[in-house]
Length: 250
Image (cartoon, rainbow, N blue to C red; front, side):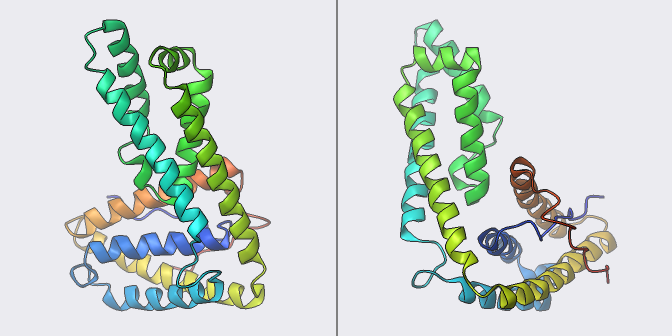
C-alpha cells in the first residue's frame, strides 16, 4: 500500500519551503480535510505557514513578485504556444512534417500534461530539460528545424532563464530576513507537517487504501516527487551539512 513519501525539508530554500507547504495545503484542501479527518492538523499547519509567509513578504500581499508572475506567464505562453503548433503539424498532409511533429509530441509527453501548471521550480526544471534535448538530440533538432520552431525554442530558453534569475534574486532578498526567527518557525512548521502526514498515512493504513485517502496520497506524492527532482538536479538532495531528522511517527 502506497504511503506519503518522505522528503528532506532542510535543503529547501525559504521560498521553496513556503511553496511546498502551500502546495501540500492546497492538495489537502481540494481533497476535503473533513473527509480525510485531518481538519485540525490541516488548520494548524495552515496557520503556521501563514506566519512564516508574513515574515518573508517582500511585496504587498504576496511573496511572489510581479516580475516573477510576468515571467512565469511569459514562459507558460511560450511552451503552450509551441505545443499547439506542434499538435497542428501532426495533421499535416506532408508525412515528413507530420512525422517530425509526432516525434516532438512524443518527447513532450514524457514530461506529462500541463507543463505550465506545474509548481514554479518543477516547471523551471522541465523547460530546461526540454530546451537541452531540443538543442542536443539529433532527431529533435531536425524536427525543430523542419517545423521552423527555432524562434519558439529561443523564447522558451530566454524566458525560463530570466525567470530563474528573478527567482534566485528573490531568494537572496528573502535570505536577508531574520534567519533566527525563520529557523524556529521552520522547525515548528516541520513538526506540524509531520503530524498531518502521519495522520494521513494512519488513515490510509486503517482504511486499506480506500478513498479519499488514496487520491490525496497519490497527489501529495506527485508534488513531493517534483521537489525531490528539483533537489536532486541542484545537487542538494542531502542538504547543507547533515539533513534534519523527521519527527517520530505518532
